Length: 109
Length: 232
Image 1 (tube, rainbow over the protein chains, first blue to last red):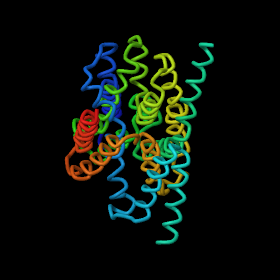
Image 2 (image 1 turned 135 degrees about the horizontal axis):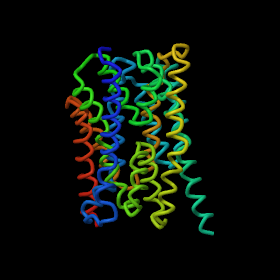
Image 3 (image 1 turned 90 degrees about the vertical axis):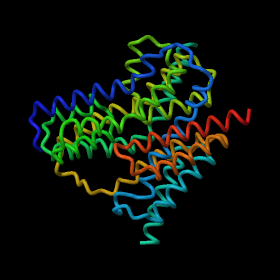
């Protein structure tokens, strides 16, 4: 790495401050002020709008297979979603997904 | 009485966060190992995890630094990965925004994928809670997650080379995050939003700086909100 110790500390500091400012942005500036209904309506979908898109490329094009779609991983991901949706149970969904992943990898090679 | 419900909110948050140590521990250790192998001294490795406290962006920063890219590219790439947290910040404001500034700053520091998404799910299912209980639930989620992020980083940095880095841990993130979001698929509007998020994120994967995810998320929020509005 070509960075000096001093430069690396600067990078860490700026990333720390920048990340904090991103996280602090709205809760810091808006605080207790009321937001319009239409904004609140959009914000209610934040979780389901961010997380599926975040994991989708990891499921479809895994780094571990150099981006080749892997049926075992697709099955495992589908299992997690179905169990999690059906039973609203995080741990059960994780366990079911892991079991299916290992079983499918063993069976499908 | 009041302190009983407060304690139970903290405890419920702790229990909600607990399963996610399965992602935090291996990735914290991995970051410690990889950062140390890249040549960073222990203080800097820990500095990353304490000051930035955002796994994906820490790995991105490290990787781009090893490519000897210009500093600005390192900063822009790593910060872009964290932009989704501005959405978390906005979305948690209706619930926790009335707290005093110092508490909001503390909430912001600990606003990670797990704490936001678990808290948001809790606030949707139990909207009648006081802001005090909601805040305690949030910090309860943080308790098993964030200290282990620091500790795991330290273990990885100190124990270092003896830990194999080729473990097949890549699929823990999808499994954990899908388990976190699946119970939140409460209505057709939620399912439609999730579907749009997946399709758009894949279609926009080519967009640099991870901004495709941000666009996909915005699009998904619009679709969810629009379906909700029409069904009212």
